[in-house]
Image (cartoon, rainbow, N blue to C red; front, side, top):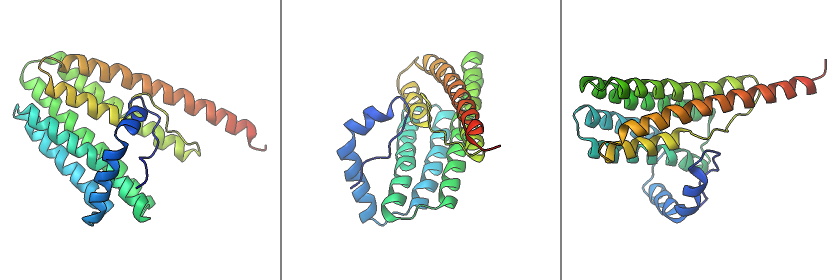
Length: 209
């Protein structure tokens, strides 16, 4: 079984080392069961929607478990595609779009739940986190459209999922988690803007007049 695809975010290298064998066991099981990449992509969105129901109804522990399962599906859809040789631009496009849909579902439901409880600051931070997460993805898409690869980012979707789980599982931790998500997400936006401008400038100097 292959190792997980390298990722340049904060948590990815640690998880890649510590969860290598569990990753391979789960991947082997999915392949034996005949799972296809699009099965897992759609399952990830469905689990996010179920987690959103849990968030809105106050069943945060159940929501955290569903967020974990959704994140696992998001990890393994690409792994299954690479192992089966089914990597397609259309599949990558669908996966990226549905990842953003999942983010909107999760943080939109969190905004709704916190607003209903009268927690205006936390609700506002949930909205900021959603906007920042969409901007991080948009910057990568715009950079790649301009011919520059852009995968860097200290805080990406993996970290958002892990942080959200912590906030859902630990009573009283959501405010701290949302502050962390907002600040580090904004730092990732700045990092990507700077990296994209630097690479585009180098690319412009290297191109013949």
